[in-house]
Image (cartoon, rainbow, N blue to C red; front, side, top):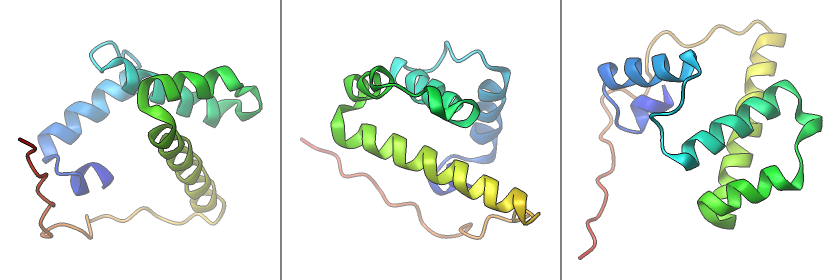
Length: 108
């Protein structure tokens, strides 16, 4: 649903989720690959996260955006675990469908 909110159409969402699920992230930019690897490591073995993992994110995204990656990964892992624990079903429909996606300002 977040990909739809970000402005991707169904075809783009399907393609991206397929590539992510296959585990071959070579077609993604280096920063994206670092973020995916961090999120996977955090999901599977969070106790193994090291300062080097964080430094790698900072190298790709800068300190503020690296914090965004870490915070969102934490939030998504938490929400998944809460939903699983209470056996909450996922929403069937995109509740944001029909809302306009904000246009990005073009800088001169």
